[in-house]
Length: 426
Image (cartoon, rainbow, N blue to C red):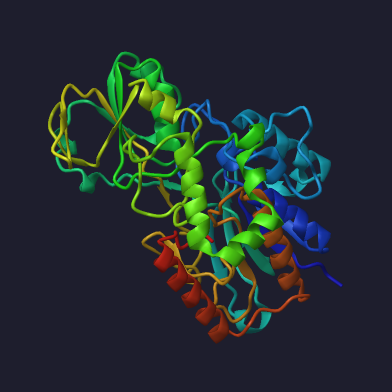
């Protein structure tokens, strides 16, 4: 019997584990990677590439090696609990080598389009158009696994900041930041208090004249190191604690977490207390931010109301003059322009059954892997998604009816709207 051919789009962490999942189910994967190497988000480069997230040189992962490794390939003992980005990439290289995955990847190959075959309602097949070194090629696949992630296009909402067009200083998105050298001795505003914004505020503050961290909503700050020096995600990720949360409810879990974080430093006193509860949105992971705030290296400000040529005016009426640079740590948006109408992204939101399958296809032969922001590591989730998807492709698992999937999606979105959680997280 002829093996089913599966197109895997993207050679990052989700793409690598998807290739392996295909092989384990006896499928024939062909992975298309637009660059000349694996790693996706975790491959540091001095110059950002269009359509790909770009990390800064000092990035350390926010999840511990114990909680982020693949199920059948532990991270070496001599690696630290929280790894530098170069070590994360090296782990992916070891994983690819161990399971001989590289031979299934076509590097420097861009996917131009993914279209249904004319007989899709019966065959479930897709026509994939790719381009490599100026040459276009069409192949037919029995299934498609989209592993391009959600850190694709920098979100730069300049329209929300009146006066930025006349600001005479430098302004960039955080994806263009690589190191703090160019900000030495300067007065810098960082907009956004997610992981990137807080990291950059800390790093730049040691050489800048002054750093201002502007936040619209505040944030709960988790640190990597928990009680007795254990990784925080190891302490919080246990069946016992999951059971307790289920019994006590999310409200009590929020109270416990918020008290725990306020024991380290009072978020209200530090100007960081958000309106949302601890488990309602993604937390910010940073070990050093409170130290920088209490020592005056970083000053917390409200949202910027408007810019002048040299100053920023904030929503609380305060003003900071002689601003040299602004860094927008305002996140990313995602899209799948190569996929026809089967997968629609509207205002950075997408409707997928279990965050994986578009519910409107006649045949479940296209899946999105890794489009999720969990309270923890993406790697094990991508692996589980890959296992499930390949078993569906092979016919070992079936999906509910279209109506049932749509109802389930609506219910999840309603629950997330109540808790103000991102629609592509769970």
